[in-house]
Image (cartoon, rainbow, N blue to C red; front, side, top):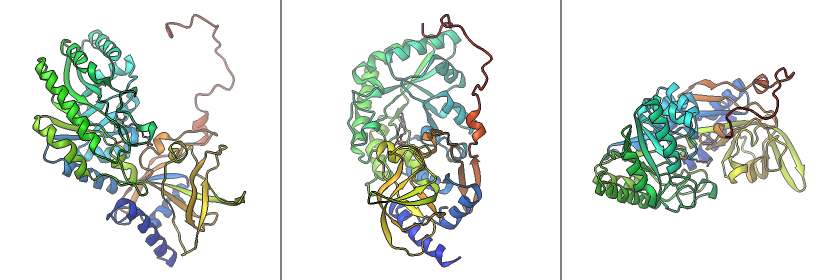
Length: 447
Ligand code: LLP
């Protein structure tokens, strides 16, 4: 290995260790030489995930919860790559989903339907039907109106539905306004004071088994206290239900949202989270479910990108790279900070740069006013902490094919999802129309 790689490895390890804690980056699969090899073989931009880092996170949480019967239902929306799902399934995880697209993905990866939690404020009748037929373990009702739809579907197909209620616990959290979900003004969950009435309607329905109460407070939560408050509020509801004769609740689902360290945040430990939620649930004799996404995968992923050009304009230094907001939207959308490291570092001085993509939007950046060793065109950079809400939020804006996803197992890797092609982007598009419809009378839609 050349001097360049030794230095790059040290630099990478320093940044990565500041995020991953004591876990050595190279040991678990993010070696700069390996990442560079991947970039050369599959091209850039490309997402790379480390199976071992995912396993380490899962084990930390699973161990912390060992005193209470529990299941970790991985939130598929954070990263739905089938390779990633299979790693988590093999560890014993269940899945948390928000659409039938995610249901099919979870089933394709081998998850048992019974271990799947399905939440979401806008589940359609066909989605409810598919979920019931598949045997989803917890179909979480989010409103009285949705319950009407669920009752209608279950009666029509005469199948048993295993139901939960997603409660809006009205618990505030300190996180980005776009990712708060547990306050009473949010669109999510059944309002707290309507839960008993909704539960009574469910209990009265012979085709329904009411199995759980759930909450989800928000995402990237760095304080565990709201989890404790929410858990206590949910347990008060369980007591009220028991008092009204409903004693079928088996599990309390405390949701996802556990924060991670991207930069200098204080992320809660798995133990602190467990201490906040597990004891009262255990005391009530219930099983604990949780739905972490980001916690399991965020820091197990990097996005590889190549420097295209250097540019100096208006007193700013720009590093133009081949990944943009279409590949990774978190910096633009949430102003999120993600560490960026060069994969080769000849001990160069640092400079202040804007790292920007090729998209025609001024909001297209990966980092602004960031200190970075002076990088040259042709070099590769790794954007860290991109394993969650990375690829899944990518788009094809500006007609850009979405990047590939690579899964690393030790020192080996495979392309878990191919790079999209320009032909893929034209699929389904009509170039010469042959079928024309007359306006009006378009069937039952919109009635
Ligand atoms: N359960 C439910 C019902 C959810 O809505 C979510 C995330 C999760 C679990 C998993 O949350 P996590 O543990 O990953 O925080 N795009 C945003 C995050 C949106 C989260 C949406 N719901 C971001 O990039 O920060």
